[in-house]
Amino acid sequence: MWHDLKPIGRNADTGGYRRFAWTAADADCRTWFKAQAESRGLTYELDRNGNQWAWLGDPEAGDAVVTGSHLDSVPDGGAFDGPLGVVSSFAALDELRRRGVEFTKPLAITNFGDEEGARFGLACVGSRLAAGVLTRDAAHKLTDADGVTLPQAMERAGYDPDAIGADRERLDRIGAFIELHVEQGRALDLSGDAIGIASSIWPHGRWRFDFRGEANHAGTTRLVDRRDPMLSYAETVLAARREAQLAGAVATFGKISVEPNGVNAIPSLVRGWLDSRAADQESLDATVTGVEKAAREYAQAHGIDVSLTRESFTPIVEFDDALRDELARILGTQDSAADLKVPVLGTGAGHDAGILAQSIPTAMLFVRNPTGVSHSPAESAAEDDCLEGVRALADVLEGLACK
Ligand SMILES: [Zn+2]
Image (cartoon, rainbow, N blue to C red; front, side):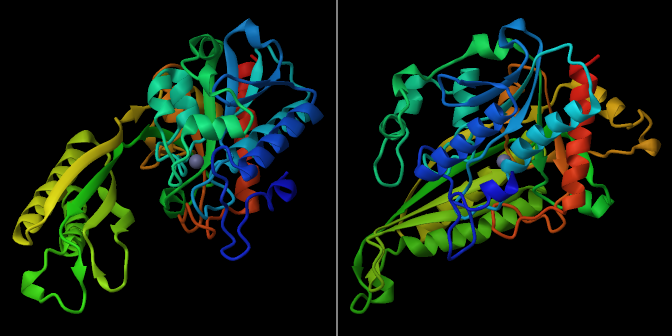
C-alpha cells in the first residue's frame, strides 16, 4: 500500500506531499482507496460530502464499527499524517481475516475529504459537513488562494457541490469510530511506548490579524514618516511566543500575506494568521487575548490600524469515556495508573475524530513519532511501531465488532 501511495502528490524538490482537496493528487488518492476497497471485496460508497467508505457487512444494519482517517495533506506534508490511519485500517482488516474472526457488526473503513484544510482554510470539511457542524451555505463560500470556490473545485473534480450537507442518517449507522494517527508530538517517544490512546483534543483556533499602514517608497521615505505595518506584525509574532509560554499554550504565526509585496516598498497591509491551542479553554483565551492586546498596543505606537478576525474555532473535545476505557481494556491497560501499558494522552492537533466525537462515540490511537515532527517531509514512524499500530487497531476492531 505504501509503495502505491508514495508517488502521489509528492513534490520532487521538497519531497513533501501536496495532496490538496479536489486536485489531481486528491483524485489519485481516492482512486487508490477505491481500488483497495474493491480488491478486498468491500462495498464501496462515496457519500454526499465526498467522503469515501469501504464496507464489510451491511451498511444499513446499524451499530457499525468504523475506522479510518484522511489522505489529503498540508503543503509539503509528510507521508504518515492521515495515510497511516487509512493504510493501518486496511491492514488491520487483513489481519482480522488472517485471524479468521467472525464479525457480528458491520465494519467500515473511511477516507474523510479535505481534513487538513490546506486549500480552503478550514480543516475537517468532510466530517464537519457530515456532522452538520458546517452548513452547505457556509461551505459554498469557502475560496482558495486562486479565487476558486469550493463548489467550483468540487464540480471540476466531478462531484455535485449542491448535494453536500449534514448526513445524520449515515452517522447514525455508526456505533463507534476509531481513528489511528501518527502522533504529532513526542509524548510517546518520551514515555517509551509505541502506542497511545487519546484522552482529548485541545481547543484550538485560527485568527487573522490585518495590520494596515501606508505603502511608500523604501528608499525615499524617512523612518519617522513611515506607517509600516510589518513592524507591528513582527512585534506581535514575538508577543505570541511570549504569551503562549506564559499560559502553557502554543501559538504560531505560520502564514503571512503582504501588500504590495515588493522588496522596495513599505507594505500597506500585512495579514498574519495566528494558530493557537492549549490544554484548556482558559489558557487558550489568555494567550489569544494577550496577543491581541499586544498587537493593538504596537499598532497604536506605529500609527497602524489592526483588526482581528476569528476564522475558525474548535472547542475542547473529550473522547467518549466508555469507548476509551473499552480500548484501554482491550489493549491491556489497567484502571490503576501504576499498571498502565498504553498511555492515555491529550493532543494539540485537530482530527476528523474530534469533529465526529460530537455526534458519535469516538476514540483515537496514536503511533509513536520518534522526532515528533509532523506536517513536514521529515515526519516519520518506525516500521515496527506501524505494525504495532496495526495489531492494536486489529485488536480493538476485533473487540468491538466481533464479540
Ligand atoms: Zn491528520
